[in-house]
Amino acid sequence: MNAPVSTPTSAPALTKNQSLVFDVLTRSDAPMSAYTILDRLRDHGFRAPLQVYRALDKLLEFGMVHRLESLNAFVACAHPESECCGQGHGHGHGTVAFAICESCGHVSEFHDHEVDHRLGDWAKAKNFKPAKTTIEIRGLCGACGA
Amino acid sequence: MNAPVSTPTSAPALTKNQSLVFDVLTRSDAPMSAYTILDRLRDHGFRAPLQVYRALDKLLEFGMVHRLESLNAFVACAHPESECCGQGHGHGHGTVAFAICESCGHVSEFHDHEVDHRLGDWAKAKNFKPAKTTIEIRGLCGACGA
DNA sequence: ATGACACACGTTATAGCATAACGCAATTGA
DNA sequence: TCAATTGCGTTATGCTATAACGTGTGTCAT
Image 1 (tube, protein in one colour):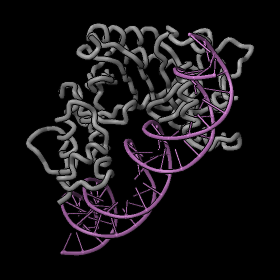
Image 2 (cartoon, chains in turn green, blue, brown, yellow):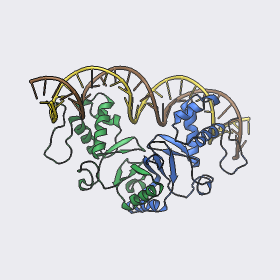
Image 3 (cartoon, rainbow over the protein chains, first blue to last red):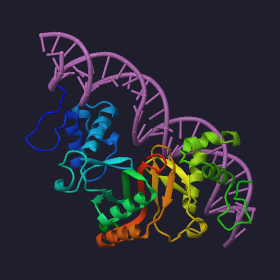
Image 4 (cartoon, each protein chain N blue to C red):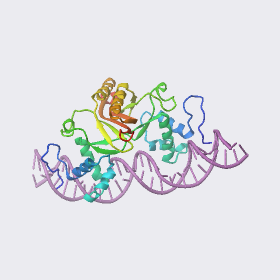
C-alpha cells in the first residue's frame, strides 16, 4: 500500500507522504525548512528527515514546490496552475523569481520574461547550457518596509 | 598583534586571517566551502570553522568575495576592480549573476544592467525594498556541454 | 501465476554547513 | 587611563542533507 493514490484531478498522483508534505507547505504562509516540516508531521508518523527530503524531491520534480536556496527552505508553488503546476514535467514557462521579506518571512513568486530572455541570451552567447536558474531578492516587503 | 596590516594599495586593509582566506579563494578556480578553506589553512594555524567564517563575513562585507547560495560555497570576486572590489562599501554597481558549471565547477561572474533594472522595477512596483539579490544559473559551460 | 523490476517507504548512522557563547589581546580615542 | 571596539582562539552545539541498508507493494513481460 505504498503506491501513489490516484485522484480525480489532473496533476500527478501523490503518495501519502508527498501529500502530507505538500499540504503542510501549502498551509504555511512562509517558507519551511525540511526539519520544520518534519516536526509538523511527527503526529502523522514521520520520524526521520529522509521521509521529508524524499517527498520534497518528488514535489520539486513535479514543479509543485520550490526550493529557496538562500534560505535552505521550501515553499509551495504559488503561481497559477495554468502556467506551471498542472503540467507534466518539462513545463516551458521559464524561470521563477522570488522576493523574500526578511522581516515577516513572506515570499512573493513572480516571473519576468525579459529577465529570462536576457539571461538566456547571455547563456547562448557564452555557449552555456542552463539547467536551473535561481533568482532570489531578499529585502523588506511593502508591509514591513514602510 | 591582531589588527589589520596596512598595505600600499587602496582596498581595505586585511587582517592576517582575512588575507589567508582571500588568497586561498583567489587561487582556486572553483568555489570553495568554508570547511575546504579550513582544511587548506590548517598548516597556517587554522583550527576551527569560525576562523574561516569570520574572515569570510568581512570579505563579503568588503565585496571581495561572493557567496554562492545554491552551493553553500564562496568565490573571490571576479569582476574588474574598477567596477566593484576596490571601493569602500556601498559600491553602486548593482547585482552580480553567476553561471555555475555542474560538470567542471567553473563559475562565471557577470552583470546585466537590464536584468537589474527589470528586477528593480518589479520591486518598485510592489513597494519591495531589495537588500540583496541572488542570481545563479546552474548548467554546463561551453567546454563541458559540447 | 511468477519472477524481474521499479518505486515508495522506514531506520540508523553519518556527513556537511553554520553559529552561540565564552574569554583574551591589541587598537583606538575620549 | 579607561572604555569601547575589533579580531582572535576554543569548545560546544545546532541545523541541513545524504549514504546505506532492508522491507513491502504494485506492474508487467513471460
